[in-house]
Length: 71
Image: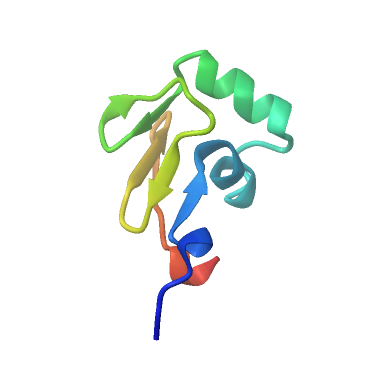
């Protein structure tokens, strides 16, 4: 069965809202632009960054692994 490309990624801002680190898109934007978020160990300042299954998103001391099958 062919994979749906729409479900192969999630934007960083959306992911932060999904895991309840940010209550709103505006809050997610401020956190990302403020350098508080890293993806796979590198600071990420683009809230539209496409995340893939297995990427690791860190905010402060917390880390979250992207599991697209659970979304």
